[in-house]
Image 1: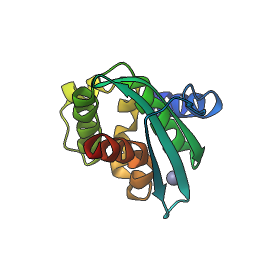
Image 2: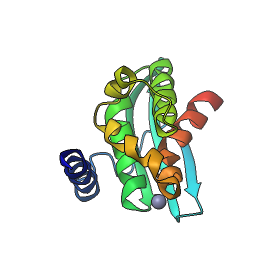
Image 3: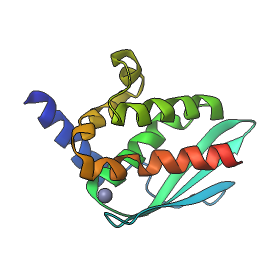
Image 4: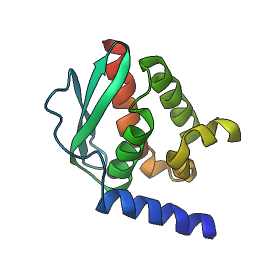
Amino acid sequence: MGHNTFYHEILTDHNLHPGHKHELEHANLALEGVNPSCGDDIWLKLLVEDGKIVSGAFTGDGCAISQASADMMLDLVIGKTREEALRLSDIFLRMIQGKASAEEVEELEEAGVLQDISHMPARVKCAVLGWHTLEEMLKRD
Ligand code: ZN
């Protein structure tokens, strides 16, 4: 019950006050992520220098879960190396499948509140959209 309230508060906060939802003029990586089953459509943009994510942002539209998840992801990966960001996105994607350990989920900080999405199959694609997009762009480059 308490956990559920916490989850809704964080989701609401990231939707009302997304810290990273804006244009990023000096981005050197950009990729669109689309989840047709819900209508989520985001553009993820990063500035990566010397293997480190210096800044990042996203634009687009979508449901509360897709937008909050992308915002929390950027909170977590900005300042990290490419390898560290890929490791964290791997943990997130495994968490959504119910396959991450409690210690791993803790590393995700706020994004760990999305753990329960694994019990809501219809929302899984919303929660993973930003993370899949991140993974694809970092692996491709
Ligand atoms: Zn959605």
